[in-house]
Length: 324
Image 1: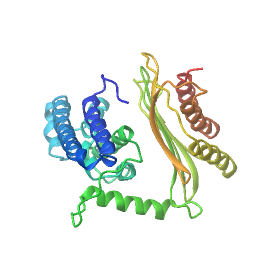
Image 2 (image 1 turned 90 degrees about the vertical axis):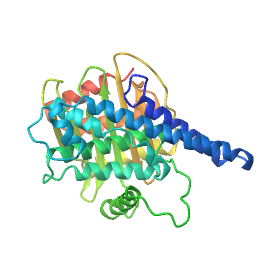
Image 3 (image 1 turned 60 degrees about the vertical axis):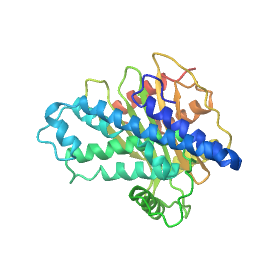
Image 4 (image 1 turned 180 degrees about the vertical axis):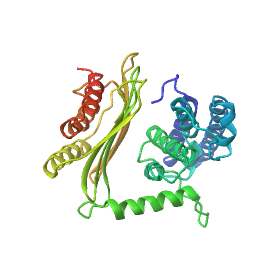
């Protein structure tokens, strides 16, 4: 859950109100559905208003000479600094709350993966690449708020298919075709995004694809140094043990303990296998909690296969934030 200091707080507050009203609507009597429909409509309109207000706030923080390029989605006219790139990405990363009216949680995940994949095309100009990464972030923030099992009301018969729903459906179909593992339709992915209070952010991904299982870590030694990415292929035996342990965790009920603190780490986790999926956000989980054990499982695999000194140091630092 986003705290009150998060720039997405008010958007996600409206998102949760909408999702709660929708869940109540599904089981409501006919006499109560009209009231709930109005509540859903009002919540969605509030989502739209908050998205536009936040867009204006983030736009005002952009450098004046690049603001127009970003707003009009045109190539940048000059080189930009790392902080400017982060501000542009943040501008595009506003959770697209109005999409909840049409997209499934699984479709939001598919779009996040799709946009992140598109951003790897080296033919793109820097602004477009940053835009796609921001869109990917926004999709993932939104699905973390509502859960990957979220489903909107069925569309009216004959209603046109929105573009992003079409893209999400297409992306899911491509994922099945390209990443099918032993003829299982669901790709195996385990991802943890780390947001320490005072250290650089890091992203750790484990993916099973056609060529086997890979681990990829993106991070930085400090906030003053450039980011690095280290990637390695996992041996078949080690990969099999990892996915077997993850499957076992995904089969059982999962309890997320809500804790608060000042010096610690927020971790956003997404895991999907044919057995099931988990998407959650947690603050400095204990090593014996469900969330802590899953995060340690991912980090342990990375520690086993990544040999670069900067990767090892980064992983040790991330795990040090987990409570004993």
